[in-house]
Image 1 (cartoon, rainbow, N blue to C red):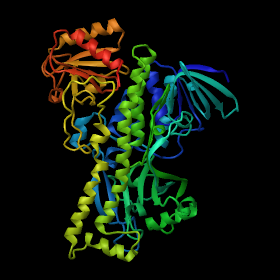
Image 2: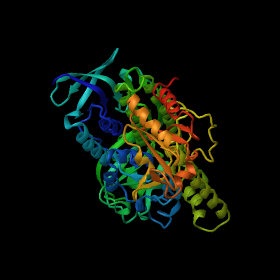
Image 3: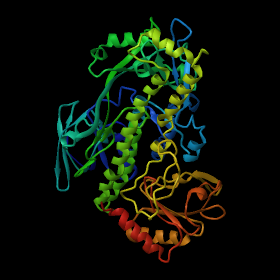
Length: 593
């Protein structure tokens, strides 16, 4: 094959790589994506897509398709804990507790107020083909190359040279790029760049069985998305298993496909024996003659790791190449998509000569603290499930009879029942750290990076995990509000065009808008400007939602980055709005450490 020169080479064809390809194409940046694998993921893998990710997918034009293929909101309102699935007496299958999950199917008012996009659920085995198809439509089919493996890379003074193997033909070719994005899950790029992963390793081994089976007879409760099998025969939740529907055509109890996750010790040889894995699954579910169509049995080690560096010269690590952690909380794939969204516009600006190279350093300064926190939260979420067992008094070291005796007071009135029920209630409530971590998944901020601080103190959160509190303080995500123009209602976030800054002034902030228009012309900056007010403006704040959160006067202004983060704000008018904006962009596009 012929050698290639391209501005950006993307290595890896999962969520991070395909999202990066789409974003760069939308930004007018040519790229080439290579993946060592012949196809997109054959495994279900990650499945929860949070509101921030769905906003990014809306920007890319694929949100409607993802919603159409994903779990209906009525089938992802809750998670629940059960005493196994079925068994020889009426204790099996009893519900022990339940909790709303990730906005309760977009019924939680905090979630509806936060975004016009709802959380959805679509496993990667279904999601990645959607991403790949759209990436091909934007970049061209020849620019998305699966079964092409990175063999080596060398950094030069002005770029990267990568040697690629076409595994279909055995041919090698060279790709010369200004920048390389490592989106390969840590398989190659990080190692070739000398980057090590730091954190917690070898916590436990998880085995996942992906299967087609009719479980509608036992898996009741159509509103429940994730079922935790707290089977006393096996000592508790992680020791038993977790059952998750995978669609693809029906959801809830009618789901055609399922994944069952089981925990093993890292050195337990049974985890590597398919017959023993399936035997344990049958015993745990309580269905002795259960013969599902097994698509795949996969093993993975629970760990929480973060790359020591996210940037090495002209190489950037994105997604699982930069951070790997448990799926509890659904933060992995979402973090990968959000990494790409943070980085893509900065690369486009640097390539266009609109920004200094130091802008690219802000990727690590902004994303590494967020991703490290997500890794820690995901591990804490996983370990917190043991509190359910502790509240009941279950133990894998106890006999089945002892565990059933410990569980029985939950549904049978006897001395101590009320106390045990409340202890279980509190343990279930503690799981909101995973299933209602709205601040973690949606309200994360960038205190340091391509941000112009306004001198205001960082507000003390009411709850740093569970509650997202909208703010226009620089470094915070743009708050949601519906606004109208000429009878058409849109989310204010939809007014941020791909690759463009957006200045939002108050209703009397025309001077800011005029200054922004002049600056955009003078400096060739992609910048739009609008006025938003309750009674007047280019857009009408029809519900007063913007007024409630904007924290500026009618003459003030806020500058939003292309990734929907607040870059700068002025609470009021200014004597020299052009000069103020000029100074802000000087700091934004050439940030210092």
